[in-house]
Image 1 (spheres, protein in one colour):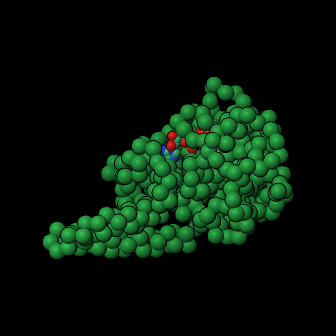
Image 2: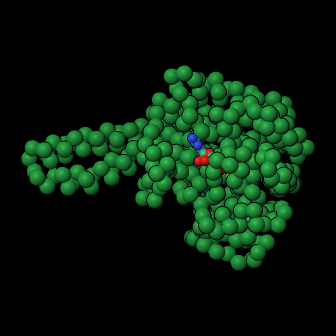
Length: 336
Ligand SMILES: Nc1nc2c(ncn2[C@@H]2O[C@H](COP(=O)(O)OP(=O)(O)OP(=O)(O)O)[C@@H](O)[C@H]2O)c(=O)[nH]1
Ligand SMILES: [Mg+2]
């Protein structure tokens, strides 16, 4: 179905346990299919092939059988940990928000720092050392920077990058939603993360940084699709600090064209939100004063109002910036 020598980006998602690697994939897809949770969750490597020509999302576990099945959360949960060593389960899908018409291969890996499952570390290091990679997306948890585990992973990543040759690293600073913008500086956190990662890489290695709210993006995209959410997810999706989104966009270290594009989209959705809320106020006025049926219309309208909010929130989550970043990647420098 695809070959490892495919001249397209081959991206390793690397990071400590629970930093949000699988959630980034769910956010890109706009569905909650990749196993994610607050404990050591992904147990083996998953190969995810984005193919713009793919009409239905499918998956298979070559350890079990070569047959493809419709992609569901249940099926991936059943595969997770049931594969032979170094034999990734495979997913084939079309990520709906990537625009460039070419394949992109992602490898989701287990956080290597669980003391309970030694095999997780081996799987991840197999992926880091042996898979045909062109890029590393290093997912760091904003709440858990500078842990010993992170330090150990950065050291190993640096060693492998030196051995393998050119392998650009993009830092995804995830869980930005936990930042209290009145007390913490996004600029300082981004600068610190960038310096820390660069210090572990060969001199002059490029290190870009995109702050993300990947769980938020997943939830807002699912709200737009009317996908059933858990109570926790619904609550999670209620809150967003627009000042934080602005700061994330300003402080991200990525091509200027992406920043400009996202800033324009944010403005557009802000206009839509204002328009929607003005419209809603008029309808409320009508409902109260003039037309007894206006209340009904108003109920229908509130869905659209949620829509403009959700679209702006997704835009500010960093995930569309990541998508433009992926579209801009060149597969050069492929090693292995
Ligand atoms: N607050 C917040 N939580 C997030 C975010 N992204 C992910 N999480 C939560 O963090 C937990 C871990 O997410 P996963 O995606 O499973 O992390 P992972 O890196 O794949 O973890 P392993 O597979 O165990 O290595 C889950 O409970 C997610 O809901 C985010 O942007 N903000
Ligand atoms: Mg995972």
